[in-house]
Image (cartoon, rainbow, N blue to C red; front, side, top):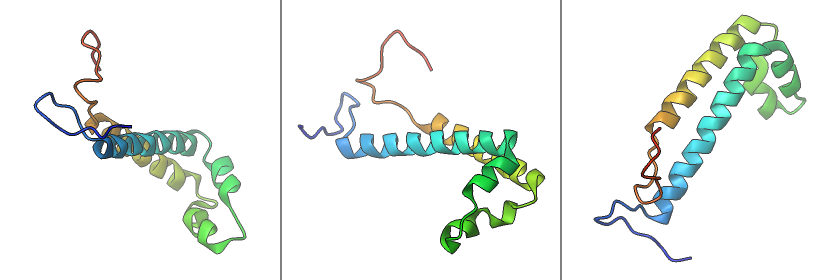
Length: 100
């Protein structure tokens, strides 16, 4: 694969494109996890409870506290949408007739 560089055409490097795609995947994860936390907080937390301390420490603050998990879910959802909104496609890869 040829390495692309940013030039006068507005095309971005492969590294920059990879970073944007990774950020988009993070945003999708945040949105999905946030939505599950909002809609099914107890089930979602129970699924992630673990005997592995490093995993359980992440969900322990939400155990038995569905309202707390819903608030955190709303925050995740908003942050994921905000992150995705900042990511702009490469000018060359954008369709000239599409918006958004």
